[in-house]
Image (cartoon, rainbow, N blue to C red; front, side, top):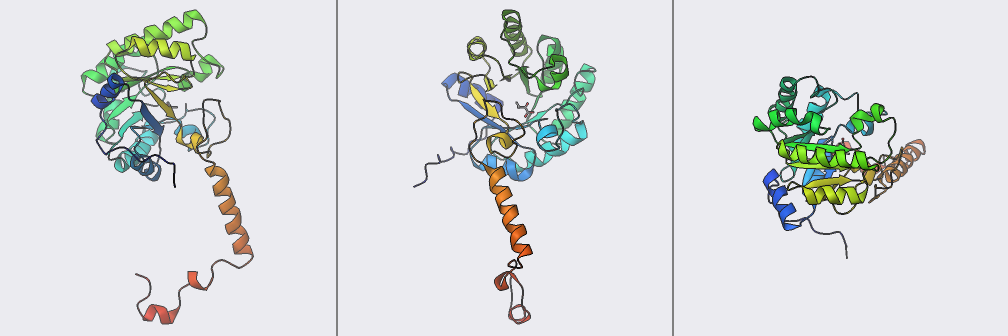
Length: 285
Ligand code: KIV
């Protein structure tokens, strides 16, 4: 007998539903997708939120950071994911410099995610400094998810992937940033790689849900990069990544076996080939 839990009933997930889940103490499960097939599999598994993350720059495109992702690239990924998802809330990640130059440009780009890619919310990185922009986007009717702690678009400013918010000053700033995002109208905040105690404090201080990645068990929800938890992206492995499968290894085994079969002339066999007599008799439809 399988021990894999059955997916929950198919009620469409909205930002309001996420708020209800926080209130009711029901954890929010979020994962990333960049393509239709992954998004469809996630959606059918009962995931609550699918983030079309700019982690695509690393995981899908093979760059060292997320910084090079562009609006056209993100819109393409977001549009194929949004087409696949029926139940999950789909969030599009605003790429580096698509929201920092002016509030007007930020609104235009957030709007493009909604109008062209048909996602239901956008995510951006930053705290108090970015709040006027968050307010402008939310006022236009676009739900915004914040992102604090280790914000990968600022990796060159940090110069390190170490845990954020360890020192008191930075921890207090993260708490202020989280409150400011809530006041600016954000519907949720991602907390990345911060101490569990700080994530607990932020979660208790906010009415809106926190979604943790490397932020301990007391956030209102959790998010991982799907390719990390599936064992597909293995270039590095922070300790917050729990591997639920080893698909990278399974795929390589399959590719190696296929190559060996082709070379040994055992693929295709007679049943995997078409024959004139069978085709004349009706063949494969
Ligand atoms: O881009 C991304 O996938 C993200 C998540 C890791 C939160 O921002």
